[in-house]
Image (cartoon, rainbow, N blue to C red; front, side):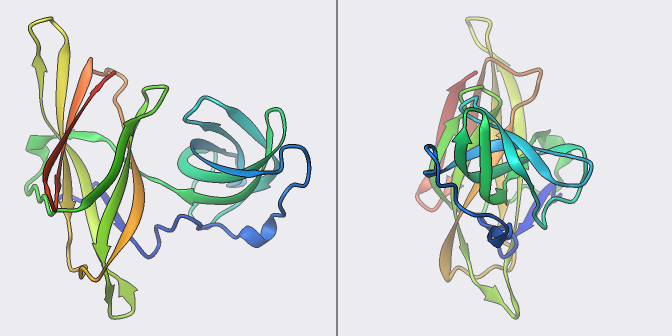
Length: 218
């Protein structure tokens, strides 16, 4: 399989930042909340602001760092846990990087594994930019680390419907690799939809209970 998106479940942790650098807010908006977001990173590899999938934008009162932030002056897909301290202002409590898949033409893959996995939820973001997936992956330790899964998103075709709208057909590719199936990990992954997007997407995922089909109007 062409590993366009490969990850170690051991490293892909929801709480991957150093939370001891932050203290919970004690003001009017101190109740912590978590959102899927686009995190803007400055030239010092620090998160300085984020835009949630609900369209709310926040500037961080203190720039946040994490080991998975490797590139300066960029935008990362992340899960951000934060305390809202004022309108448009927040302090970070924890951050986790989210994996992002992009549709790739089917003929680019020499192999197209579809090992089964669990699906907890699939939904289109309010801004129509991403399809989020809550996946349940079987895993276990191999020697001193957890097994490694590989994923990619295959675009099989784009069909013209009788009403002249276009539907893109996507398949989630998944390789279990050498990962044992001792226990289940929940992981969130986003599909970044192309700028030249179709009118709808039909997503196919092979699960332990058969093939799951989801369609989204964009």
